[in-house]
Length: 334
Ligand code: NAD
Image (cartoon, rainbow, N blue to C red; front, side, top):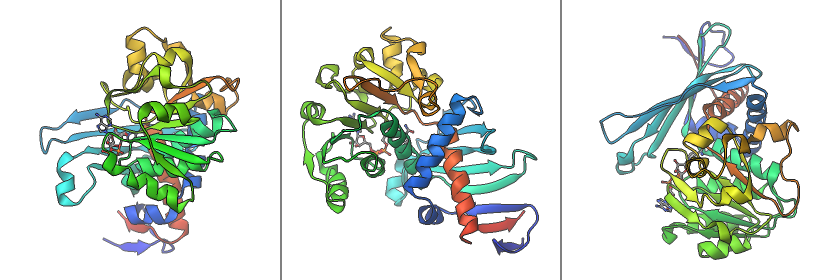
């Protein structure tokens, strides 16, 4: 099978972009722009996500699935396939594994295979960052982090770029993990403090929750007026991070309403009759100036970031373009 690097003429070329090349070529700003654009396209119905498949495969305790979609505006078609393999830590591998497959929307031909692990963290952080950029108060000074797992440092770095934060406060169920967040703050010269959950809410202007919790970690009464909260951890039925009563106080935004009410943080407020589907605004409508976001400094804004396949396709497509242009992609003639 002929193998060449970009620059040699190949027919039926498939671009392969490894995890390490993704890390080399794709940064937070590229991800932010890709995610903002795809949320805008989704709200205009120029891009749509197809039904998600997610199954326990009865082997290695793994959950496997795929998320697919088509962005007509960006001409990006494909899927992210992968899932969760809890035994991977023993093998020195991340538990979450994913690969993104892109197709030519004009012909259906396979175009690219792109490593999806780094890009998943990057696009998830870009999602909450987009929500902060569009919904948080401009004068936000304190960022509260709930969670200190794999995603958290990506979230923290992307969030810190959105406002002039003067301090980060953080809580994690396992406090021994908090130094990963403290290290990012130290590197960026932002003061860091480990606090309890009530104190975190009392101090924070912006809160990000990024945990695997199955119960409310933050009480509605603790959250002060004016807060923007990005709930990023709940992406499965049954998971939960905040008190559903917060939805009655907040203006609620999401990446995709269907996911928000079924597997996102809003599932519990919906089940409790606290909100209706029509109360939830796609953030793309705010980006497109079709609907208002925050209207005053007292609003609590809540972004339910559930994670959609189109986000993965958007960042993978940019990563593949950058890898080709920087001569770092492997190109196979299949
Ligand atoms: P991780 O396993 O590395 O970290 C899990 C975090 O959750 C840790 O901070 C841990 O202390 C905390 N935690 C676990 N159980 C808890 C509990 N019962 N109560 C409170 N905290 C608890 O996982 P990660 O890769 O950092 O992902 C975090 C969450 O984000 C997961 O639920 C994952 O499914 C979700 N996620 C969402 C998106 C999205 O697009 N919204 C994308 C990727 C991951």
